[in-house]
Image (cartoon, rainbow, N blue to C red; front, top):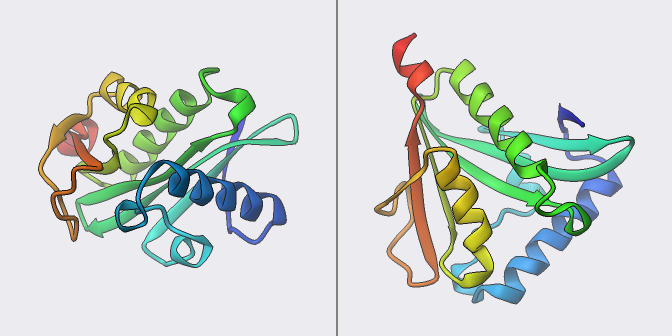
Length: 157
């Protein structure tokens, strides 16, 4: 697998992200959906990666800088056919390493509280994320959980 910084101009990634937003809307009330669309992901404070395996798009993820030392994990998605096949772990390890390289000391995220999101929450816990209070502009929401991790390599450099 190969991970690349994606400029979000390709048709394949646009379709992949559209499916992501539609899936979020099918499992979460609209007022609790925080997935960004293409325009939202093209902002300068966001770095977006796509994961390719032998020419096939199999995953994506991004970080959004909130301040110089804090970023939010956004738009983590694995192709349906590749779920539970290691794509998300491969990508999350890459994103954490890149965040540390960028000097980010804390990485936070919002994900759903429903059973559908349990595999995602378990993945984040595996990488050291713990549950936390809402951050940035988020407010308490029964459909959301918030998680964060301190990036130790960034803290010691």
